[in-house]
Amino acid sequence: MKINGDRMLSDMKALREITDTPRSGVTRFSYSQKDQEARAYITRAAESAGFTVRTDAIGNMFIRFAEAALQAGEGTSAAVKNVYSETKRIVVGSHIDTVRNGGWLDGVYGVVAGLETMRTLSEDGTVTLPLELVNFAEEEGSNFGSTMTGSKFITGIYGEEELDKLRNDQGVSLRKMLQRCGFPEYKREEVVWDFEQVRAMLELHIEQGPVLERKGLSIGIVDVVYGMSVLEVTLKGVGNHAGATPMIDRRDALTAAAVCIGEAERIAKEDPERDNGSYSRQNQRFCLTVPT
Image (cartoon, rainbow, N blue to C red; front, side, top):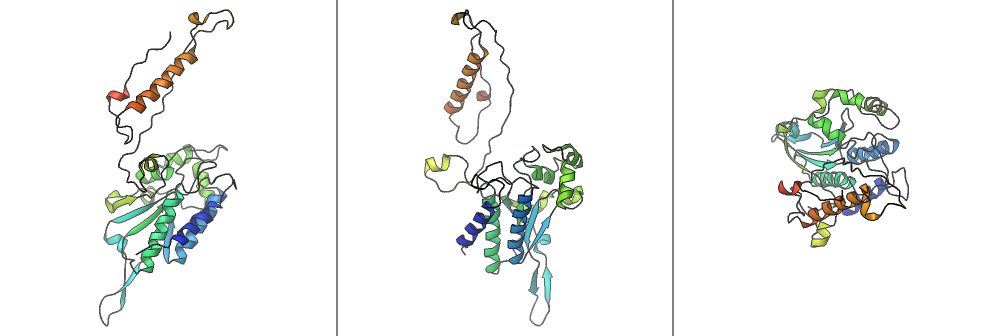
């Protein structure tokens, strides 16, 4: 069984043109007009293949095979079988929202690849696999400043109070934005997943770094994800006359900052496990001697 590569590429190129910044990357924030256009494109493609499309209250999209009509036996009538209620489902997908002037394959690749996989299986007659394609909403956080918003609601990390707390640069709340988009009313039990009903999840994604290319590999399987911490460090120096104070007597904060930056980079580059993201506890703590 082989996918239709030309059809998949055509979909990705069509979505590339749905942007607020033509010829300058792809800018398609969640819940924007361009986001609605991209969703409509995906919906048309899915429904034309005979799939069902559902959107939850946060804007997460779900695409499934239609319920299969099966012949129970000779001389019997066809019976509708809902494969999704009978076994754990396999989830594939990603997102279609972007950062400003983003890459045209980021996220979209995983969504379109999932759609093309479902179309190929359907054309082969394999529609009893409990496969579900998901387009997660506001993954980039470009509109409301909160990354993976749709996923946070799905996992229950976010609840109804975040609908009013999250606001975009224009002061519009997430709740108001969702209402403008015409999404269903928020009901926690209809948004949060029961992960006991999920067998596996796969997101096909382009590599956003140089590791596979450097190693001459065409594909890799991610088993570790870097954790990110944001620290705010204040370095205080002593202000003095720039012309009359000798260098040996200066206490410039920028000089200390330069030492800190250089030392942080050295530690990261010298870590023996720097390629797999597994930093030891020892290397998370270090001491710097800076000018005082």
